[in-house]
Image (cartoon, rainbow, N blue to C red; front, side):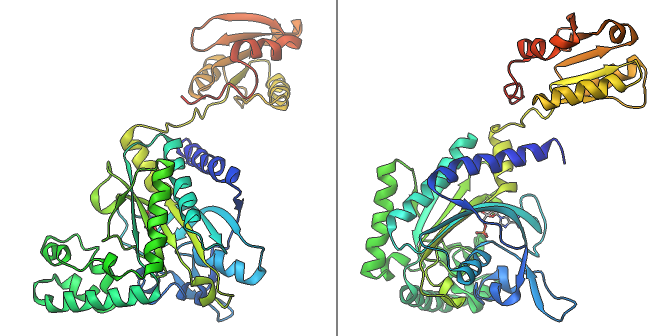
Length: 412
Ligand code: AMP
């Protein structure tokens, strides 16, 4: 709701101002797709198996509300076959059936990018650096970038086997939740934050020992590219992310001012293979998704990226019947000046109260005398200073008082 919604929109504009100059175009994928599109995300992915809002529509089709954007973007790529590299950005809601709590919602929003068709570690660096730049543009200082490589398909499979053996041998000491996760997806046991699992997780084998030479040199190039750009990062060989399809580079942004279990503000990685799974040609992909809700919580925690001033510049108070306010607001808005007014021929006192509440810096007051004289009274609502000006000079007078149009809505 306003005024928070204006901050929401401002965040999306900041994101666009970071990614559009890097050649990303806006993509608007559908909110829902054929269920099969999302099933390609993998049957070990909780987002798909446990958290999806899927249903049958009136035509008997199985559809699902999108739990994330990447699958829909890849489906659009397969369907429309745009030229590569295809660089797109998005902003919109996702839906996951989760236990709602602070920072975790069943409908939440993300901004993100995807690039399809390029197998180059320097692209991973560009993509990660854009997310980093975005957080910096919001003023966030306590966000940490964590990076890892999950290797290629075979590396990942051999690592998963090693984890299965490792945790299997220590099954008795694991929490019941970790035992259940081990059945479905051994990688995710590494995510367990339960104290009971800590020793087994700490002793688990490292992904690094399972990387093929190609995957290893890819990762080294990513890390050295980040260093070249001066993007601070920590390598964490325990970082596995919720979605099954990641290959090679994977990364996450952690906001240290937020509660431990909900402190990931964004993440992404390379997903070579997803386009092929959706019926397209073999096409590498890399991207990220950043949670808007949580990013704003992190901004609150750091006291940055304040609400833009949501008020109008000018509030017109008309005690002559209301028609003059209609004309003045229309004229000012046509010139690009934001303006509001009161209705229902309220008293002067009631209209002045509305003017104060509106957040306007200036009230333009007209009564019958002013209408007859072709003037209006301009009152600075901060200092209470008043000046009478000719109606024809009003716009110029407001420019002098508030600055040119477009300048007046600075952050509060
Ligand atoms: P994911 O798509 O799971 O990789 O998540 C990327 C980012 O989206 C996370 O780092 C969060 O900031 C955000 N996110 C994921 N799930 C939720 C949720 N249920 N509620 C709010 N934000 C979420």
